[in-house]
Figure 1: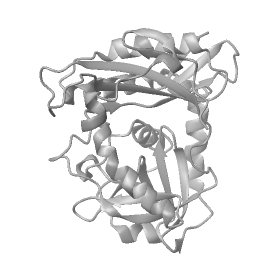
Figure 2: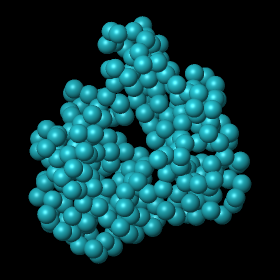
Figure 3: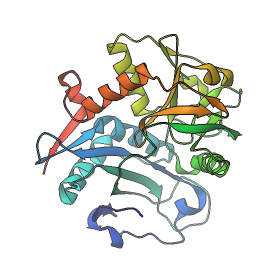
Length: 303
């Protein structure tokens, strides 16, 4: 069961979460004409009267760009102010996750993006570890990631996540924790809702934007952190067979943070993960606002 934060932002006002409801005729529900974001927040472990949000500006900018695919002009600064007010009203006292959502709220039945009402809501829930921090098992999915020529994959378009859902359920029902999808060229793309990294010979490798991946904010943060630590980062196509012989593999995302992979299919990976652990420790220090070098990545909200 989820524990939702008590206040939501819905139809231009803050209301109790239970009162934020949409019609069964809502356009986005039928056609996937929506886009969402997701960002984590934590009570400041050093100061009890503050909430910390990780890379708030980047999350708001990405959602604003996702809204553009829906013919919806929603400025990033407006999203940011609503999220700040949302946090102040809820005053969460545990680690939490915020889900902002833009959608076609019209009750019409024609699949379109023009001449149709759009709207925006925000809700949140308490969230600890999304996946086991000790390591997970992955299978290569029989479902392939969509192509950017058929879907705007740089946006978190809700309709696109049917593929992720199919892949995740296929993996779990086969006895695995998570799925890894290949793209249309047969190259490693990403997990069901996370980017993927591997380590070979001390180098950090990850599929580039030309591989139909989501432009992950945590992914970009990890690349910057790694370079700052003197770790060589290579963005390039990745073959499936590379995962099976990699020194380390991990997934990254807002919910997953950095989650190590301990097995891909029936290939067991090393339990020694020096680079993964180094990056994970650094990312934790940054999100807890304990690293002065990256303080501009953390938005502090007094509550």
